[in-house]
Structures are given as C-alpha cells and as structure tokens.
Image (cartoon, rainbow, N blue to C red; front, side):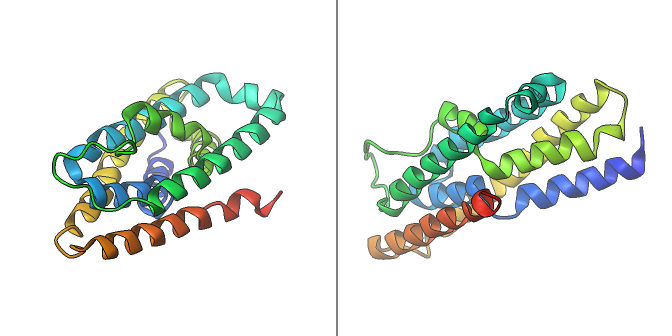
Length: 200
C-alpha cells in the first residue's frame, strides 16, 4: 500500500465529509426537528448509500457515465430539482411534537440512500476518490479500502452532524426559532446548488 497516498486520501475524505454539504445540512435540520433517534434511518441511508456508490462506481459503473455524458446531465438537473424540493420541505418544518406523525417526517433510509446518486457534492467526492487516489493499492483492493474508509468516516461525520442538530433542541425551544433555523438551513441547501451550475 502507498501509505503517503493513503493518508492523503484519508485527509481528503475527512475534509469532504465534515464540511457543510446537502447531507450534513439536512442531518443538522433533522436532528433539531425530529431528534437523533428518528434521524438514524437518514444517517444509515447516507452512510451505506454513499459507500455503495463508491464501490459500484469504482468497480466499473463510472465507465457508463463516461460513455453516456447525457446521464450526468440528467442526474445533475434531477438532483437540483430534488434539492429545491427538500429545501422547501425543510423551510416549512416546525418542531415535531411528541407522538406527532406528520406526512413529512425525517428522511427515510431508502430516500437518503438514493439521494446520494443525485448529490453533486457526493459525485465530487466519488470522482476524486476513484481517480486521484486509485493508486493507494492494486485493483480491486483499492476500491475495498476506499469503500471501508467511506463507511468509517461517513459514520462519524453523519453522527456528529445529527448530534449537533439534536444538541440545539434545548436552545431553540420555540416554534418560531425552529422555523427560522430551518429556513436558514433551506437557504444553505439552495446555496449548495451554486457549484453544480458554475460550469453550466
């Protein structure tokens, strides 16, 4: 194993996972609105969904997107549309009341897992992982290592962001404050679209 490249890859993953992006913003809002326990399926969906994405793209699915660039364009615009929808849902969310079963609720496991495929920041991470750090080991060991690191770093990052949101619950106690916070998160989510269309 190329240890210097491995440590560089690890640093890359930590920076990319822990910096604000659509996943982390949504986890922060979900932790505040629904609490940590109800956010767990969202966390697991992100972690497993993204690790699966790293593995499948690394093992060859990426060649399909290179052969058919139109698929990347479709995913980009579908992802943008879905992010706008999620921003609207977050902006309208107030604090969840005990025993409340509203129609929105936190994101499900499958919703979070499938979202990774239309997450622009996710694609930046995957492409960087598969191209810049492929030489950390021989194929397919390198893909196995990258997928494992994704699982480990992703778990820590998502749990931290969801806990951070949950920790804000005793501070943001009124419905007005929660709504204001969620509107801010929705605006940040919309701002995350900017890099998607910079080169459009």
